[in-house]
Length: 363
Ligand SMILES: Nc1nc2c(ncn2[C@@H]2O[C@H](COP(=O)(O)OP(=O)(O)O)[C@@H](O)[C@H]2O)c(=O)[nH]1
Ligand SMILES: [Mg+2]
Image (cartoon, rainbow, N blue to C red; front, side, top):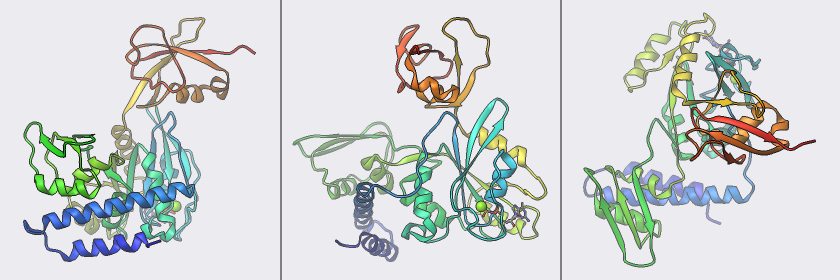
C-alpha cells in the first residue's frame, strides 16, 4: 500500500516550489485536486478501521472547543468561565483528555471542551493532534487560544484546513448534478468569475466527466474542490490572546493584528475580560428558544434556550433520560411543522419559537 501521507507531502512540496502564475495555475489546481482525493481515501480508510480517539455528540447546548498550543492557558480559561475543575499545570500536556464544563451566560448554557494542546506536526500524529482536530468537526464554535509566547496560528489553521474544517467561511454556492452522459457543463448564475478550463480539469481529476455544475459565486480551485467533495464543515471561530498581564503581550498582539486577527485579550491571573469573553462566545453561536408544554396543563415556564439544530431527542434528554426511554411521540405547534399539534418523532429538528409537548408510554 503506498504511503498516502508521503504522497500528500510530495504534492504539497511541489505546490510550494511552483510559482503561481497564469501558466502554472492549472497545474497547481490539479495538484490540489489530487491532494484532496488522497485525503479522502485516507479518511475512508480510517473510517473502515473503526476510527480512533475521541468523539463528541452534539447535544442540546452548543459545544465550544478550546483549541491551541500547550500551556497557553486553555484549562485556566475553562476553569474561569465554567464550573469545571480542569487541571492547570505549568507543564505541557497537562490535559490528556477532553475536559468538559458548562458555561452559563444570561439564560443560556454552553458546553465548553478543554482539548489537549495541539503542536506542530499534529497531522502526522504528533501529540494525538489529529484526533483532537477531528473532534472539532462537531463543535459549534472554535475558540483558538494563544499566548504571547505561542501565537503562531499558521500551523493550527493548516491542521483545521486538512481536517476539512473551514473557519469563518461560508459553504461555496454551487450545485453538482451527476449524469450518465452529456459531458461536463459548467455554468454560472449571476456575477461569478472562474476559469472554466481549470475547473474542468479539476472535475476530471475527481472522475467527474458527466455533470451539470452550476456556480453561484466566484471560484478558486480551493472553494471548487470543497464544493465538489461536499464533506467540509463550516464553523465560526474566535481568537483569544491570553496572559495580557505579561510584558511580552503587546508585541504579540501587534503581530496578530498585522495578520488581520483581532483576538480577545484576556488575563486569567488578573481576571481581565472574563465577562467579555463569555459575551463574545455567546454572541457567536446561534441559539433558539423552545417552549416545553406539559400535556395536561398550560405552562408559564421559561423557554429552553438551546442550540440551533437540536432535535426533539436532544430536548427530551435534557429534561430527563426517561423522556427518551419512554418516548411515544411529541406534538409541536410552530415553525418547524406544517400544522398545529403535528406529531413528530425523536429525530425531528425543532425551530425557534416551537411549542413542544412530549407524550410518554405508560408504565
Ligand atoms: N501570566 C499568566 N499566566 C497564566 C495565565 N493563564 C494561565 N497561566 C499559566 O499558564 C500555565 C499553563 O496554564 P494551563 O491552563 O494549564 O494551560 P493549557 O495547557 O493551555 O491548558 C499555568 O502555569 C497557568 O498558571 C494568565 O492569564 N497570565
Ligand atoms: Mg490544559
